[in-house]
Amino acid sequence: MFFKKKPKNTIDPQQVTLVEHAQQRIAQKKRFNNHLLATLFLVFFAFVLNFAFEYKADFTPFNTHWSFALAALLGVFLLIHFIKVYVFYTFMGKAWETQQMEFLLEKQATMVEKIKRSMDKEAALKASAEWEREKQQKNITMIAAVAENNALGMDNKLIWHLSDDLKRFKNLTKGHHVIMGRKTFESMPKALPNRTNVVITRQAEYAAENAHVVNTLEAALALAQEDDRPFIIGGGEIYRQGLAFANCIELTRVHDDFEADTFFPEIDTAVWREVWRENHDKDEKHAHAFSFIRYEKIDV
Image (cartoon, rainbow, N blue to C red; front, side):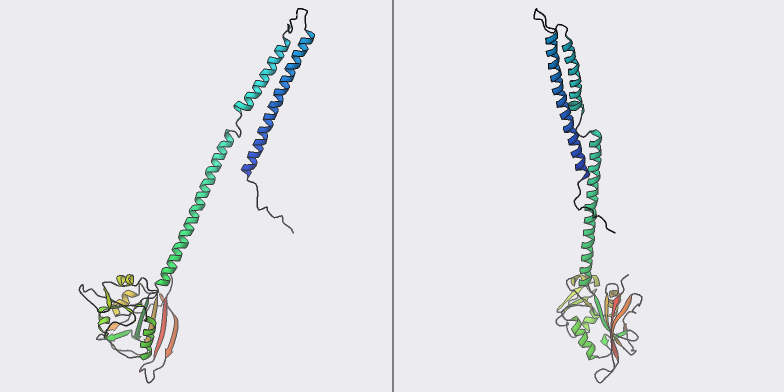
C-alpha cells in the first residue's frame, strides 16, 4: 500500500484567507468601475436621445427632462454602490479582525508556553548536569581497616600491621584530601605527605602542623570541594558522621576479632552494596587474613 507524503511546506491558512479577501476586494472595485463607466455611458446616451427626439425650433433641448430623471436615478444607484464599496465595507471585516486577534493571542500564548517549556527543560538539563558533575566531583570515600567485630583501634593506636593495607591506603589517598578527627591526627607521627590533611576538632585554638583545622565535617568537605575524591580516614565518631555524606567505602576487613575502644559503624546492607572484593590469606608479612572490599551507596 502506498501513502502520499504530506508536503513539507504548506501554505498558512491565514495567508490563503488574506489572498481570497484581496481577490474579492479587487473584484468589488472592478464591478464599481464597470458600474461607473456604464452609468456615464447610459447618461450620455440618454442625453443624446433626448436631444435627438425632443429638439424644438426654438433650440430649447431637453424640455421633457426625462433624461435628467434617468441620470439622477442612475446616479443614486452609483452613489449607493460607492458607499457600499468605499465607506461601509472594511477589507476583512470586524469579525475577521476579532478572530485574528484571538488567533494571534492564542498563538502568542502557545509560543510563550513553548519557550517556558524549553527554558524549564534547559534548566532541568543544566541542573542534571550540575548534579552529575557534583556527584562526580564529590565521590566522598570513607577508608578504614576494620576487624570482624568492627574494631578499629585501642588507646588511639592500630591493633595490627598489614603492609598491603598500608600500601593500598597510600595509593588510594595520594593527591587527595584526607579528613580526620584530632585524635587520629595525633596518633600519626606527622601529617600524611602528598595529601591535604584536614583535622576536625572542637578546640578553638587547636593548631596542626601542615594541616587545615576546621570544626565540623561539613566544613572539612567544603574545604575539599575541588577534590574529586576526598577521603574520610577516621576515627570512629568521624566515620559515624561520614556515613551520611559518603557514597563509597573502601574497607579492609581483617578476619579476626579484637579487643578495642574504637569501632567502625555497622554497615547497613539496605543502604550499601558490596561491588568488589579481593581476598588475602595470612602469610609471613600478614599475621591475619583480610579482604579488600568496596561498598557503594544504593541510590534511592
